[in-house]
Image 1 (tube, one colour):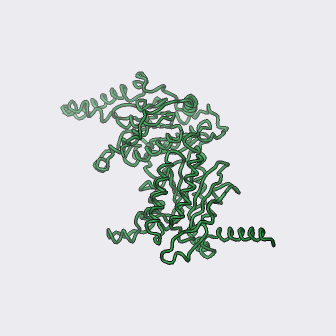
Image 2: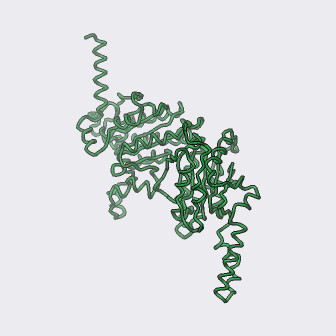
Image 3: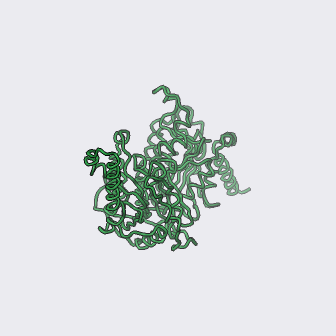
Length: 520
């Protein structure tokens, strides 16, 4: 064999060895836990044959605590580029079989390199996390590595989509990278995110809690809101990441790809004419409205289990990718509270950063009241959503279905927050408050002075009808130009798509500034 052929054979052998990460025994241990390896995950995520790996032969430089005898090519993370449905993406996947996926300085340099390439070339970056945290043997160097990753998360924010998949442990400082990205997905029963583990919690607070109950996927998807998606297994999680990407543009200077559909633009749905209950206090499911108007009934919901009184997610309308924000009357009557405001504000700001038009479906009786909300800063959190809509320059189409009361009316993409096209159904009521509250404020003294209970009830009903006739309808708002038109519910799909088509050439700029001061 020639020297050149021998060198090629040696390269092939070394690549094969590097591809095994920490070795067959550790790979088998990963599989016994029901988990895939880093390379298996990337194989599922990327188009077949599209992955080009970078820095396969990088090794750590640590000589502390015997680390000079523990060298693995790749050093615990697989990085590179590939395509998903033909679109370029940059990826990194932590390899738990190598030192538990713990982060070293060289590992952080590999991750930073692909993040820099993603920003420079205007393509999404997807990180698959499965790591025990900072590599203790490297001390401050490992912490510096995390800091460099976080800084790139910050600089890339609003420039390229950043998606995190948590497929194993993610603890301590490591949690901040997924927290800084646009979307975070976790897997039930096999991934967790915690700043401090159960042992530390027990030591400090005396509280006994399991890893899953402290920072598992279900907890972060439903209670904290840290996770936007919770998958039942890794295959489902990777499929969700790929579906999410189909709604997103490559970067902040491009548009999301259009998706051809055979769903007619002019399709009507008579069921929408009957969906609003006769009683203003009766609930209905806003998902039915969304499913009726979007292309092929396909709606990709974000934060599905968190703050369910508001719905956010992606869909296509006439082939165009849109972000949908909608109150959910079947949960807490659709009121806005702290979590709902934060959830919707974050989503609105993402859509605005990446040129995705916003469609808002309104049925909101107001903000949730009570000491818990006031002490928790509902004022500041509600202002986040107001700020997000007022700041957004993407096309904004709003449809008011039923209630739109008080400050919540303003917050939900009203005309004064630069809503472009605002429609209302005939069932809409746009007012400072509902009839019950209004009559109590306006006629409370008169009603108290009436001694006869039957007559008092009759007066109250008459006053409510008077108020309903005057305010609890869309006509006053239409007369003042606060809504463009009152539309038949059955025609909502057609009217929204036509509005979005008209707004494709929208131009709107913000005043020059270093940056805003969102009420955090």
